[in-house]
Structure formats: structure tokens, C-alpha cells
Picture (cartoon, rainbow, N blue to C red):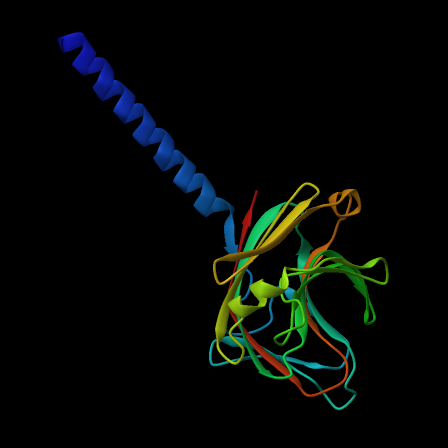
Length: 206
């Protein structure tokens, strides 16, 4: 009986230590991509407006009404990204993964952020195959236009999954995405009249 109790205690202690070690490892792999004060760690592409205001990251169309991107200086391959966004006006934007930008021409894959009825959470390949997957139409109700939304994107190997406010929007496995390399980038769509606020941009490397 005593041996059984001792073994049980040792097992519990081992599991507890393992759990704590995993928690420490996870916290070590997590980083905040936007510091709330400035755009350190990011590069602006194009002439559209990107700036920090009241602890938020703001993007809005400029006079040129063109495409604009804000990309991380570091490249990220396998990760889980969470962020909050609030669309004002048109709100057509997106989150690019494993992407590179030359001028305002982007190569890579966009997880869509758009007004209602325009496939937020789907994956679009710019200057390539176009739409790879769109969420089921009934999932569009997960989007809260004009309010804060939480998006989560998990990228591991060739598989990408997105969630919006806790609703899984899509999952796709694609060899071309699997071979991709590059940064995370936020987008301003062309056409003008776009403004989106972002906060809590957190990334955990896998």
C-alpha cells in the first residue's frame, strides 16, 4: 500500500513538473509583434498610412488609394498567430503568411479580413491561383463589423487553419504553402476609404 502511494505521488510530481516545463517552453516561444508605441520590427511597403495611436496599430488609405503592406522584419515558418482587429469604413484588409513584398507586389497567402459577405477567414494566393478556400457562407455571421474581432491563424507545415471569434473558418493543406518562406504582413486593399485598427498581435512559434 505504501509503495502504491509513493509511486502515485512520484507520478503526480513528474506530470506536474512536465506540465510546468511545457508552460515555460510555450511562454518562451511566444512573442508580441506590436509593442503599442511604434512600428519597430516592421517595414512599411507603399504609400498608405501605418501608425501607432493610443496603443493600437492603425492602417488607413492614403491619397494614392493603392495597396499597402506592413511586414515583419523577421520570417516565420510554423506558428500560431492571434490578433484583434476592428474595421472602420470599408475595412478590406488581410493577414499574409510566409510572404515577401517587392514595392507593393506581394507574393504569398492572405487570410482575408473584409466586410461582411466577403469571405473573412478564407485564404487567397496573390498573383497566383487566387482563392484557395472560402469559409462556408453561414460562417460569415462570426464577423462583427465595426467591433473588435479576434482572429487566430495556425500555420504548420502545409496546413493553415483560421478561427474568427472562436469559430473555425477553414482549414487547408497545400504543398505550395508548405514550401513557402517569408514574413507576416498586414494589408491595406486598394481603392481608398479603408481604415482598420489592430491590437494584441501575439505569435507563438511551433
